[in-house]
Length: 109
Picture 1 (cartoon, rainbow, N blue to C red):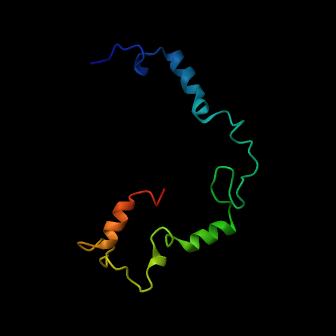
Picture 2: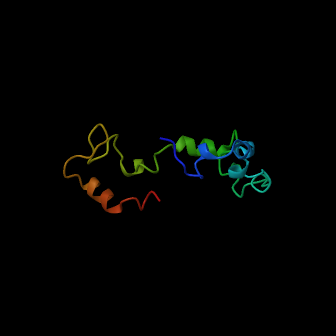
Picture 3: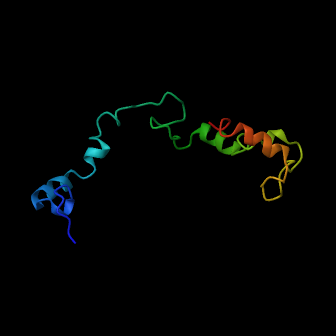
């Protein structure tokens, strides 16, 4: 059954629908003035929006580090982490699981 709600797009007059459609994404994405005027980022190697500039040395350095810093690779000297199974899950009763569980998301944020 059709809705009689006047706010429903299907119930709007055709000329009003065309007017809204003609605006496209302009209202939601801005007119391109303020957001695109920033010329330089405060961080070298980054664009004003925070993404890396093409060929950025910073991007190369951070990419080479990969997830090592966030995954605690510096904590272990051997190839495997104690307290973990080969698939990366925690071993039952693992002290590492307990330690990381008490930290929660604090270390990553």
